[in-house]
Image (cartoon, rainbow, N blue to C red; front, side, top):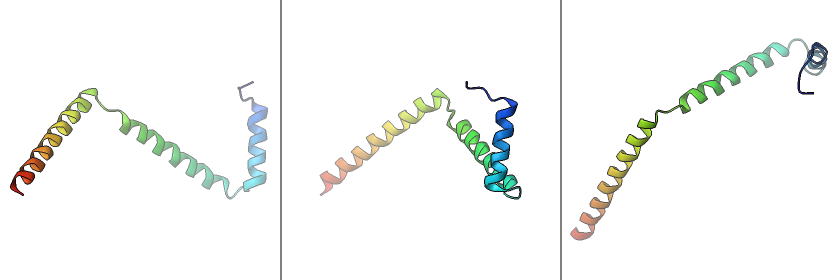
Length: 78
């Protein structure tokens, strides 16, 4: 049921020609290709080394401590 046969592909091609016309199909194909490439690049950027995440958490924790110390100093000076 979930497989495409040659008949299905030909039917989709004919419907595409009817709805979009032969001049518009190459533009649609290029747009689809660019969208797929962008999606794949986005997935590759998501891949992060777990060590980087741990280091990032430590940096954030240090920054929070520095901010708290600055707030305490400002409160004491006021």
